[in-house]
Length: 87
Image 1 (cartoon, rainbow, N blue to C red):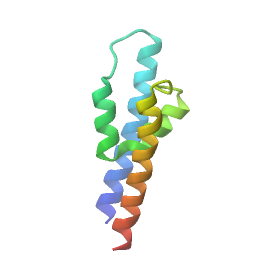
Image 2: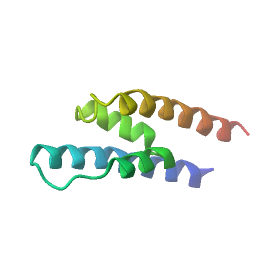
Image 3: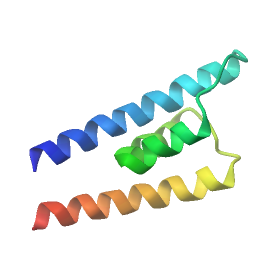
């Protein structure tokens, strides 16, 4: 169980960092992190971090798919994590 929680925490830290880095690159008109990468991080356990990064850094907030699906994915991940810890 601690391995699952550790992996979950690491993915969410990565999600937060990825959103911050992409926002900084966007401001400087530099090479960006692909949206596919952002989605993969979110899907593989980093949805809470990417959602927090989206709100904290005001990044991708105009994209409806990010604005709606990232939070839904985050809630789903939290529910699944809770389920695994109640088994």
